[in-house]
Length: 373
Image: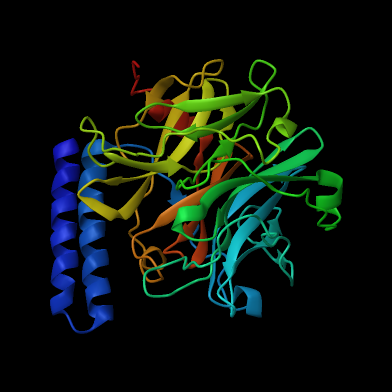
């Protein structure tokens, strides 16, 4: 199975290189998608693994509605309360600054409610300001990026990346009372930087429940899972920082996910433990993101107990390739509704997409691949 995946990697990589010889981009896109579907179908026939099913109406949210979100809407965090799914998504507009917008849905598919103004902008923090963010040659001006959301008790917590130059790419924590959030009173608590300065850190997630009576933040995955525990998140006061490992070396024992890029949405609690979705690439083809799944031990989430040997989503659709970053699928939100796992992700750093799967099917598939670590 892994050899077939490597074969697909090589052919698609060759196709990308040959794209320079094709003058018409749409022609290349058709060829690229055709190749991807061919090899995806061949691989799926042999692997028979459970994958996410895309929403047929993708992309579900696109830029252009308001000036502050005119260029990109992507990478949404998500949570569900009383049957209503809430999205907080990253948006870039006319001023090239990244802010957060809001949308909601009752069916997980149609997000008809959207706020006309940003619900969160990065407050002034002690960060340097000579920066350029976003896709190559575009020159976005940074801001707040890639939110992850968890509701614990009556408080909604949000971790996100504060971008003010590659020397100041730092993780940030804020919160809001859910009653205020529900009434669209955006009384966010003053954010605090929680990662060390002069480091590049992204993709930190807060567990949605306390573990052994403590708040838990997962901040590094490979070469070692690192989780810090706190009696109170007030301990993170802007003076105390979490020391992480952001080296992200390649894993020689893996193929399609030999380069672990980061955890996606906040962990999902299931009977078997903690369901984790993650972004990864083949180390030799780092621009083609895939989404994988694994399960961590319930009481000791530094232990992986199940991990699929194949991705559950690959960037094969046009909206995952025709944007600012071709081949990037980046999930920050996942919720369980009516027995299905809904995953919300950014496509090509431009649009918001949704995909889902029966949760029990995904779990049963993952349980085929027990891991010893």
